[in-house]
Amino acid sequence: MDLLSQDGKFNLNVNLEVPDNPCGVLLCLHDMADHQGRYSGLLKFAAKSGFVGCAYDQRGHGKDLTFDSLGYFNDVSGKQIVNDVDVVVEFLTDKFPDKPIHIFGQGMGALIAKNYLQKNDAKITKVVLAGSPSYNRMTKLNLNMARTMANVDYRGHAKILKDLFFGNLYKAFGTKGGYDYLSKNSQNVIDYQNDPYCGFEYTNNGYLNLAKLQLRAYKKSLYLKNNPDLKVLFIAGSKDPVIDGVKAFNDQLDFMEALGYLVTSKLYGDCRHEILNENIKQTVYQDIVEFLKNA
Image (cartoon, rainbow, N blue to C red; front, side, top):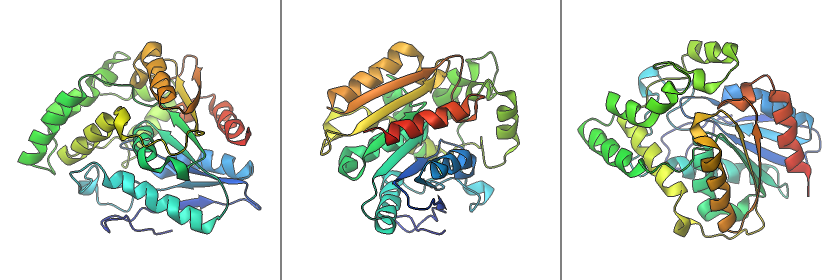
């Protein structure tokens, strides 16, 4: 289903799994260098559990784009990818009136979800943040470097940005430039590497947007807190380098609790970043649905 982004520059390519008599809606925000097709398992499980499952390809991602356009957001503000969420939320609200809207965000999708909540938490009932990037004290440096590189060539691919943003992830499990940090499920890593719409190089413009999303996600003053009853579930693999350890993970919980939100969490032992693609994925699906169903 075609749905145009707010600025008219991207087709968001919305996919729906609709059960009979839905009790709510689960909107999925995918990770970076990823696409909505990889979340079909979660969408189908949600639909079988009574929830409309929805996912879309975020700007700079998806099979509607040419390969040279992947990782290019066509925006310098870092805000349009957040505005795109609102386009989909409004569409879902109109299509399924009086049904609660919930958000699931994976990795970068979790950052986008946090940015979206700042002004729009009253539109959302519950949020699940999976593999959410923890606060990084180097983000301002990364932003300045991304801005410099984007000013030189916004469609270029500066290696220094990839190293700054992801060097530690690639080294986490003893590989250089590999994707073992994604999953201990080796088949998942192979499938990711063989998917031409995954793992692509972000443009300098893409990194500029990512840095702004990271920086704003941890600015308390940006959260208007119109829905103090919002329930937030943090989930992650205990060995996910994106969360940067248990302490940093718990700091994320403290940050959201300080905003007044109702926060719970679960870490999955010996799992990495993409817990939806580990061998325990059915357990993760069930935990997500139980969180959505509980009062």
